[in-house]
Image (cartoon, rainbow, N blue to C red; front, side):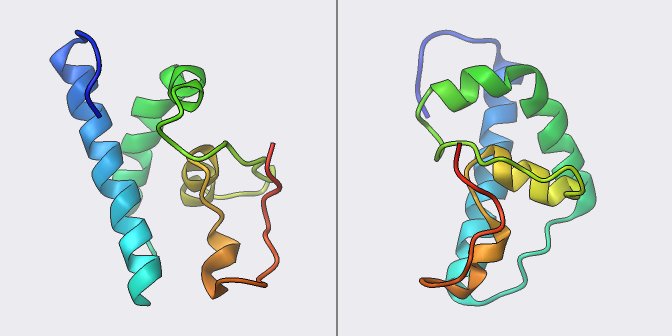
Length: 100
């Protein structure tokens, strides 16, 4: 992601999110464990929450999914960034989170 001038702390936070989320994508694609470390998930949520509308409107992520009220932190993070953990089985797997 390259965009206009922003504080380094925000840019660094975006890089962390990018690495965590694409790490999850790679784990899904390669059949590895998709469990993210809870501290990383919490850190990403802390970074994203105040900027959620801005980030989702940027087009840098898939459209946000409606996350169920009972979703855990990892599911919430993934849904915010357009990833549905229920679709791990690939084509034909019923999605848990509907698209907005």
